[in-house]
Length: 200
Length: 256
Ligand SMILES: [Zn+2]
Ligand SMILES: [Zn+2]
Image (cartoon, rainbow over all chains, first blue to last red):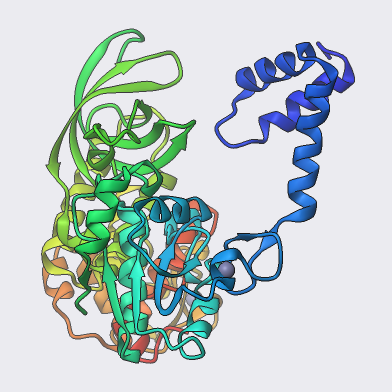
């Protein structure tokens, strides 16, 4: 072993984080070694805190501090309009546009057959269960403008249009192949406003 | 073979794409002249970058690469064919995923296999233009043959008894192909025209198969194709088990 056991353990844990290779893990570990102890404690406490206090909203699967998230609790949000996103971070992107007043549903991913992700691995069943009780009339599928996001939108349209619910997709103009979270709010806002109902 | 530190041009199909850190992407490419390679694409997630759309899976590209020690870096890409219909139709999409998955399993890193690249490009074009639900299963059979693993179809793979001397009632790729009553194991054949379909695919009559009406034969042929491919690569193909089974095949009541 090159480093002490505790340093080695930290490097290993950091290395499990997405986008962190062995070199970056080492760099982060040595950064943490050098920072003052109170800073390190705050970091550790924040990690523990987020795991203890946050869960998933039981209705829309957004991040939440209680059984229902703030969007689901807000009485002024329109329950008939539902925006479907891949990731809780995409809610932030849509909110920044200021142009959406409905509720959300987080799928926690997109259809990715080669990665073994099909509808069963996403929160699709939970979405279907919401449609009737909440009186949803339009589903805006705001998945990423890439291959997996498009496939997910096509799948949802095929599944949900027969129920008499409009399934729409933001207008083109979003950077194709990219992520929603990287779209600027003006572009995304325009795309939402100009959304089109999906055909069969 | 490309020399490290050298730039080279090639044609390629994007088999896989993975996030790398905040802004970059790693793509697995099936190239015409350099076999299967992994390459970094820088800055794909920036709105201003055109690399994002161009390096999505299934896209057929003309690329310029720089060869590093482990990874290559894509420096230029030009779209040869984006296979639009594959992107805009869920059934075509799920078949394309199965095809890319199988190619990724069969191709070895850095080993040239120009025939495999060429067959993939042709099959994607046929899928794009016809949308036949039998493109991916047919592709699997042809891929097995190309990889030197054609199954026995006209005589029992167990005892060698020819078809003329008795019915061939089962199929087991691991045993080498069809099996007679006495040797049977694997999957029992239940549709009468399944073997004929597979023969036609392997004997250059793919076009006639693709336009066959959906039938129990076609469904059984498709199921055997997945079985055989999985036995050949020695693992399950996740892309074939994600609940996106061809609805037409599902409706024929043959796919469980
Ligand atoms: Zn909620
Ligand atoms: Zn036999």
